[in-house]
Image (cartoon, rainbow, N blue to C red; front, top):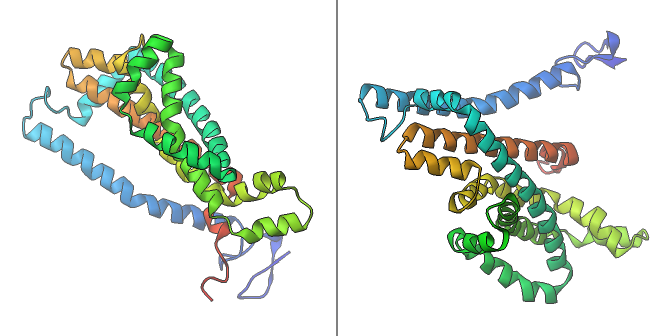
Length: 288
């Protein structure tokens, strides 16, 4: 049975009062705080869209130059049959490429952390590979894989691997040594300590690289499709551009942005489920 902090009386049902104790009220307060943090974003987006709509409508801007938000919404609704199918293809390529990029990036980062020889030999090559423009690499993948989906998955994975690998090795290198010392003193092997202790401590930083990769996978897949594919958002964008239909170009862009936002939400949710809220890892004595 819970005790009210002010009245010092038991609270029936085990629920807590609104004075700060855990319970339904605390959950509501946390939800309210999260909502308040989102208010500036919602207001900024509303002001941006409202100003955009007013500028195009009241300024009589040619729709061939800038499409109004309402025109973009109508374009999405009117072409969703083909646009949705293209988005499904690009979504599959980007998602699978993202998963490969995360898995390989973590493995490469662990290898760079564990072997200084491997780091000295491969890290510069890995960094140099990321400086290559996609437009110069895509033709090679077209030669190797043709116009099919696997080539786009490989391109997406290759260009998404670097941020995850870099953040993995940086996170592991930054883990305080006493974490390993405690685990080894308790009889854990070095491999167990690496996978169950050091990676857990470095997980927040690794997720930083995962988010960077998630922000670009669908754009990378769409660009690869634009340079050569049979289907997908890149082909859809190319057709919209060839027809000089500005609302359709904006429609495809909005869909890619929404897909990226959805993937980022999934990444953030997985981080919260696996690692818990970031506030839980703050030092409780930091303010003392």
